[in-house]
Image (cartoon, rainbow, N blue to C red; front, side, top):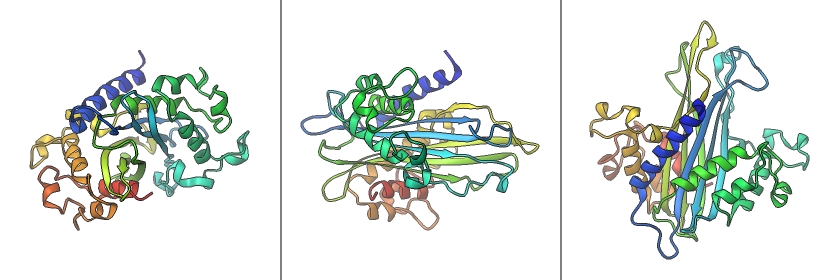
Length: 322
């Protein structure tokens, strides 16, 4: 088994355990549905600038709403692709929008055999996946990673094995968090440069939020996660080991926050409390929980979550409004 496969296997086992602990309340019943969120991240060489001064940080995320039969009710996919280059503005990436957020600016339409941008092809993949199980989604992708299903190929011709893998992971982790099959599923991904990045470490952090909303725009379920791409530097060159890396939730106790926490809770435990706190709230009510110091301002939130929540809750609020 390769190192990347080992990391992904450990990550999947971790996210299954964390998601079950955070959300499960006995299984979906009636018109309820399970909510899932998964992320697959990798640090690799920049495809177009293969040098020791450039990197590509990819994080593909999927949010799913699934029924008891394991079939997809709704799915949302996005990808953060960050390309720091130490020869350009010290590795500072000015445009941190996701592929989905870039819309026409991603610049794929001109080279696409079907004349479709990335966001349009992902939308086609999402629509095609509805009503399918993880195995049926995987069956639509060939060994080369490209779509083989005729209906899928009509709207999506890009490399899609990563979409299938992250959707499978999201389905496997999905639990009953309070959503209904009729709720609206949303996903938001936000990346920012870590404020303490320096000449020996360039770090880009991403927050992920999957939420479901009822007809009144109130959150019925929420799952959050975060990842940290820590890119070591020496003598003006990247020295970070390439490969897959896992999220804060998947790290669980290895994130090592408990000892420094005033409430003795790890990141994944505090995130679970935050997720539960958002349920029943609108986007504006979620944002109101952010204090002037970017910590929690709400007493109920502070009871189980004392970490910096500004970026997390802003991303949840964005998911609830996009």
